[in-house]
Amino acid sequence: MCTVILRFAPGTPRPLLLGAVRDEFVERAWDPPAAHWGDRLLGGRDRTAGGTWLAVDPDRPAVAAVLNGVRRPPPEDGTRPSRGQLPLAVLRGQPLPVPDRYDGYHLVLATPDEVRVWSWDGSDLTGTRLSPGDHVIVNQGVDAARPQVPAALTGAAGRDDWVALLATDTVLVDVTFNGRRYGSTSTSLVQFAGGGVRYEFNARPRDPAGWYPVVAG
Image (cartoon, rainbow, N blue to C red; front, side, top):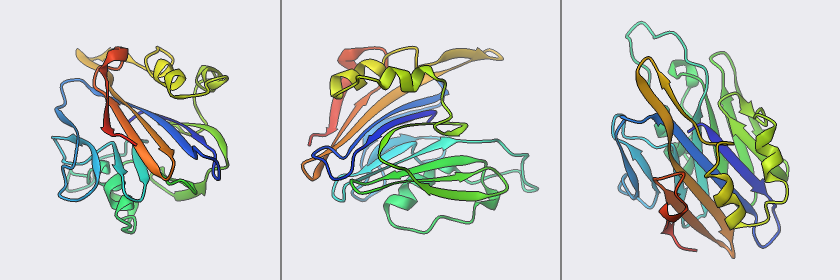
């Protein structure tokens, strides 16, 4: 997950609108959103490590997403735990694990009443509650995005505007590193309204016809 864009308006009929882009090496296998973990949580599953980049609890409702941060030198045993387990943990109400063994991350948890972000940079784990308004979270942190991303949100009033934004080069990437293609492999849109949640997914980010509802709220 490389970009999360959200509009937080607590106390209104639509307290949260959240768009997310997952960027990854395109050959890394994954499964589309479903209840992969044997409980109520819904999200896409990374087949390599079994975790997720974004998951939704449709009953609470709540959404959690993780963005990769700094990569740290390998530990002595050569392995680090997967950051993809973190969204599942916070949605289940579990305490965050001690971060020392993890690579850096930014973990987002949003409900109709609050949005929290935890950031681990390899030295310090910090937490913050976001103020109402528009926010962009990228690998560098909260509201550290390129200026054109928040600028593109100006005037974006509803779902169709956000769907259009999530299909543009403003947020999507497609590059090659050492012969490996790295790009935006999926997009998600989560809306809280009327006490429920609508979760939509698109495995073809540049195709407006690729969207379908995972949870129709």
